[in-house]
Picture (cartoon, rainbow, N blue to C red):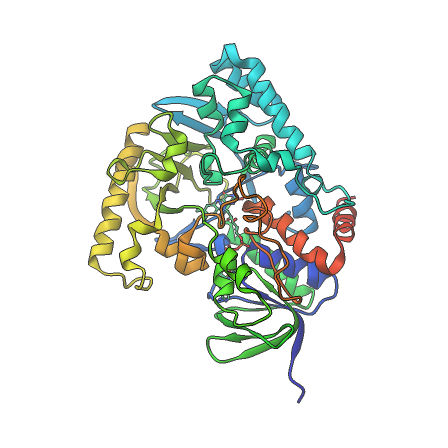
Length: 500
Ligand SMILES: Cc1cc2nc3c(=O)[nH]c(=O)nc-3n(C[C@H](O)[C@H](O)[C@H](O)COP(=O)(O)OP(=O)(O)OC[C@H]3O[C@@H](n4cnc5c(N)ncnc54)[C@H](O)[C@@H]3O)c2cc1C
């Protein structure tokens, strides 16, 4: 019998891998997605404890009103059956700085009006901020699904200025600067490095409308998988790729941990580029390229406390709560361990349409990998007592801080569960459990930009390190990868047609 050969093998079933699988199998390619875990989805994975399903990565999404950008993508991806619950229009995100609270309201006008009430002397600044983030989004053709004539997706000016420079250029009011920087955990930005466009595209996306996924982000992964299979694609779980096998000119197969070898004409890697490079032995790629990729810095990781509340005890919060001890928001990623946590993100989850009481929530704090490095050679569930003690202490610190902002929460907790940078590293194979992958640096825009093309002609990349992270960034990144096969304007027309 002739050995099976796919048109395209996609390594990793994160959002990027699944969207590529969807687009390419819909367009007639014989695709196979190969996932190391039992569960597909990467950061869309969920886990269940005490009957409660917890999200691990994607918590909230934006621009899902009809005609808004994510809605148009979701329609094309047949994802409109994923149930959503709208966050509070009057304040979907609340930024708390030193105990003072500031609301981000939905809709550009409401956003301006609500913040203006807190900053009556800076109304012009707030308007200018909104004007400029809209201008940046409008200048990015892929974020408007406009057909393109060049490979320039983001204007150079927004790549070469940092977020802090941008915000400082909009207002001199320090408190307003901090409030506008408040969504920092959504991209784990670094002062004087993270380019403006990352902040602008994310805030522009959420201001338009913000939503929680009812019942877990795995619904996105499951729906995409169902569609991929209906187009004839295959998805293999429990199938870790240990090597991209190359001959003199190209990749010929992937070797799996269990000894299987799968062949294809093309390969797309949805795994972290540094992790991918460790699995390739070839002379096709020059040493300089390997060193450049290996030398790229990653965004910080996180420590999360997953809370289950006692029944009907705690009112449901229909907003996300960004806590900062003080105005030094840019210093929160470079925290002092003794003062940790000086910031966190608190979010309730929603499992059905019950929006009266909260069932569960998460507290997410930044954490550097070095804090857990001594357990780096251990595996999930077997990291030892000292590690468990470490996690208990950290969880207590976060819960105690939360209690100060929301008195009574502690009493309402039935149980909690924690994850550390090691958990993220082991479940998604992201380098050092990094939240969002490689840091883009406005000082080295070309060097820190990872192309969808590798130096191997039939090996491409996708996922959060291409283009950008998050639901929108990764979907657009997948389009960029698939455009190598189909052409960008073909994909854009297809999305347009599915929306007409
Ligand atoms: C804590 C947290 C909160 C977030 N919150 C939000 C949010 O609210 N909204 C939002 O839009 N975004 C959010 N994000 C970002 C978003 O979830 C990610 O950017 C996105 O899901 C990443 O997708 P990806 O395609 O890059 O793949 P990943 O999710 O990284 O998946 C990669 C996949 O590859 C698999 N893999 C790795 N190595 C191998 C191998 N050797 N063989 C086979 N398979 C392999 C992994 O198991 C995994 O399934 C959050 C991220 C985190 C970490």
